[in-house]
Image (cartoon, rainbow, N blue to C red; front, side):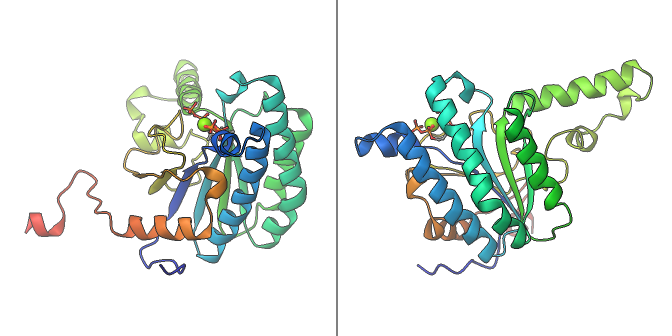
Length: 244
Ligand code: IPE
Ligand code: IPE
Ligand code: MG
């Protein structure tokens, strides 16, 4: 199939990049080797997304639950994140990407925290693709933080609870600057969201692929966009044919 992007592009694609460990196991390699290969897939996918003119790409890189993994694996993932930021950020900023990191932040190492802030600051005026990494991200935590903030405002008399709407609530989430994802892709054959963008995915199209993340690349993204362009979205209403 053509690797050209189809005409009906989703505005926002979010990807749960899963399957690094299984990719490594199949090759009798340590899990870390799968994560290294996963970074190469990130590189290729981000570049493809920019070339295809995607407006928003969000990548789930590390969940708030991934801290439960063995220390050595968490350390390896943090090391890879550092290396990726050091090696790729200049190019991504030069390509016009606006970088954001959504997640807890308070739990990551100080130097990673500084790298995150630096990348966001350096790309703040960029008008190209919004490239968001969900890193130490958990949707339930995000939703609870938003609820807590609104509750505090109400307690202090700064907010009338009756004025809380879905839009107001969404404006308190990490993703407030982004449109809701139109397409969520998960690789590796698992069919769950694993605490990713729970609020934001209300009307997202889901695409579950058996491909393991390190094997994902430009052609897979193009195929996913093609699949999306054939989905019929209704948002609870009727399509024009049924309504006629
Ligand atoms: C995804 O791959 C990367 C992260 C969750 C950080 P996994 O490490 O979850 O790979 P599998 O699911 O064990 O194959
Ligand atoms: C989800 O994958 C998190 C990321 C891809 C970063 P996991 O591998 O952590 O999810 P579960 O544990 O299989 O649900
Ligand atoms: Mg996994």
